[in-house]
Image (tube, rainbow, N blue to C red; front, side, top):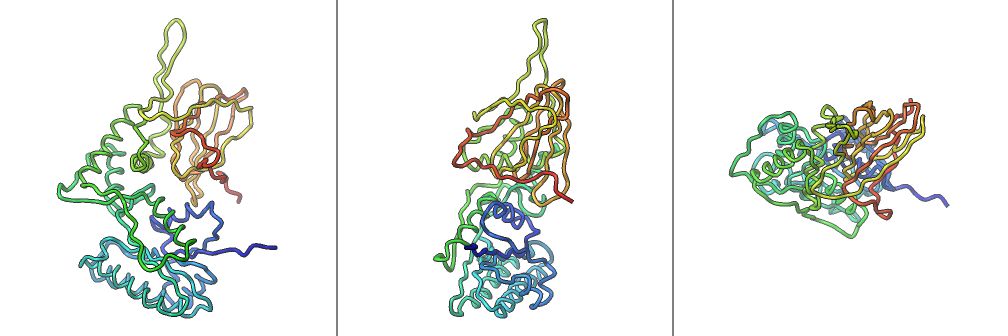
Length: 374
């Protein structure tokens, strides 16, 4: 018997949270329909894009811009979506990405509140299902500095050696976009949940968030992996180092030599983790997978290699040529598929380090080719 495929349609899939949601769904049983922004130009085009989706996750919206434009754009998108849903032969479950600012009186807050009311009105029809998902302040890999979040701006400036400033009175409630994406997936699968869900982050002053990122920056640039046992610390570190990639890597290590030979420090960490060695025959490629949260270091200590890395859903492959004759490491960014190839004529010896001990039940490893077929 052939299993019926389940579809999720995503509006705003090209945005920050949309990319993270696609990454989270990429290794799930769900099939994904991406609703292009231009589909909102007509109700029929929008309905065709949604098609037979079992669930619609509405992320499309305008966050910044002239007040009147922000207000009208977000309300217009909600109206178009409601009209499109009314034309479909089956009812889709709708999850709406609202904001903690939705209770405020800013144009953005009013637009979010109004869009929620429009979609909630659609859900009054029989068998309709609507969840208003109220989100705190999101951050993560791929966030646009000076647009998506203060964390994105701070990470961008630190990565470029600049000095970020924080407003002393500001407060944030931080949560990584991958954790929000996982929550959306849970809500899509749990149809008993209805009406309003408030996703909680970690509240703190903006100055504290900046101090934590400055500390991460100082420790990492000093050659040490910071403490990562707290989930927020891991999330901040992964977000921060994504802004260093790719120009910061590979990082050369200092080799200490004397009459006995040489020595270099492969990994220095406040956290722990697991290290292992591999031998790879000439012409062999290892990897071809990605991780959502895992911090992983590649360090060639013998032979010649190419480390190839591609961001999920992009087609640009970064290639790093590394050699055991000049030890240097690359810390693989999360949500990037990667591989290491022996391009030399002798065995390749590589030291791998991960911030966590490998768990066969929860490996955080998802197969994905690096080089896409043409």
